Image (cartoon, rainbow over the protein chains, first blue to last red):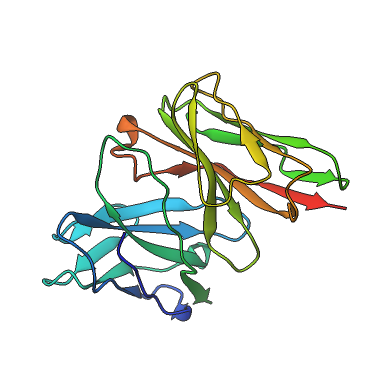
Length: 113
Length: 115
């Protein structure tokens, strides 16, 4: 799995968009970008994933650069409940195999009132 | 409601005692996982199971044991051989019904403290 680099921490004002970057310069062609988040003392929660096209769901948008070496998770209108550690994970998209997810240290996002 | 449950939420153990953490899912997922998380750190895989009666060691399996007798259940035993068991333990599951095995659903976790 390709290595990812994320900032240690970020702040965002409530109601504004939160843009969380992730670098994955060694990503290979069959690897997907996944985002999870972990609210304090809870289990991680899947947010979104993508291969090369931008993706959007009810929680967030994922923008992947054309060369796929970096991506940005966007929370369009951050709320206090979005305060969490956000993990960017790169994995081969193998539907038929169970493998571990490699969680690094992630980005601590703090949404400020 | 479909989901994954872990019990207990908090667990205290004396040194030298074995303890078993429960994990149950009703999502019809084939694969289940156990992770350990230490303060300020990411998750590390202990064991995983892709199918009933089969499981594989993860990165930090020493001092732990698991069983997978039923699809819904994947209990983790922390044995006295685990030198530093105080941690937050997370169970997860995934499978074709979740889109892919990479979309893992996590339980609320069990916080184990050794006294």
